[in-house]
Amino acid sequence: MRLFVTGASGLVGGAVLRAGVAAGHQVTGLARSGHAAAQVEGDGGQVCRGDLRQPEVWAAEAVAADAIIHAAATFGPDMGDVDRAAMEALVTAARRAGRHPRLIYTGGIWLYGDTGGQVRDETAPFDPATPWGWMLDTVAMLEASNATDLAVLHPGAVYDSNAGGMLERFHAPEVEILGDPAIRWPLVHADDLAQAYLLLAGLPGQGGDFLATAEPGRPVGEIARAVAGPDASIRVLDRAEALVRYGDSALGPMLDQRLAAPRLTALGWRPRFDDVTRSGGPQAPCN
Image 1 (cartoon, one colour):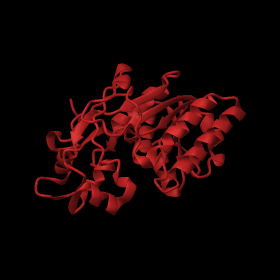
Image 2 (tube, rainbow, N blue to C red):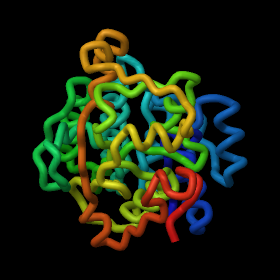
Image 3 (tube, one colour):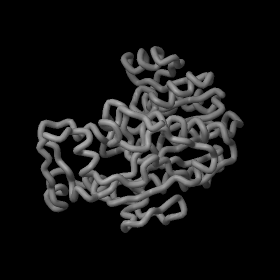
């Protein structure tokens, strides 16, 4: 397959690029800077220089691929607007080229809201925490356009074997937990998530929503202790204090969620990392 990956130098996109190259695919990665381009090349990918904020520069190259994996985000206050403009540019480019590329769009588990202690799956209704509801509008636009062969992947809290990603916050000298240590996070290792993207990219016509969670819900207190170590100082901020300090960005991490991934597992997805606390934490895959 010819794959085009946005965010190809990031935690998720980089894992997708490396997994795609290892599987023998031709992978092109979008790179905004020289440093990002060097990383893409070092990981075995081809480079498309461009910025997510200027999709007119790279959209035509993206839709020429067999599949586009959209794993980039600005994470700024205009994140939704930038993402929407990028997806609209892909729709326009696909129509101009007479193409109907496979598109794997990245959503997120926080769109599902608090699950009330129950294990939910893709059939659960969306209940997005305030800052991320725009994703649903963008997906609706993509579906209505019928310009791409669309699937939406909702990753759990992503981490890697260095306890990066969502677990990076637990490396601080004084670890903070927002809300309650009993709050549960669904988790997925970046390498397992990369395999989920590749699986969906290679299955044209498999549409709709897919959750990617290897652990349906691990208490955040257990996660923090596994990463920070037994002697670390851990401080719990109650909900009010967390919202004052971090604003709306605290809403997602304070959701208590248990989310399973039956659609992906039915397609053959088999995550290797299924216990973030096992044998010293995220460094050890399951056997």
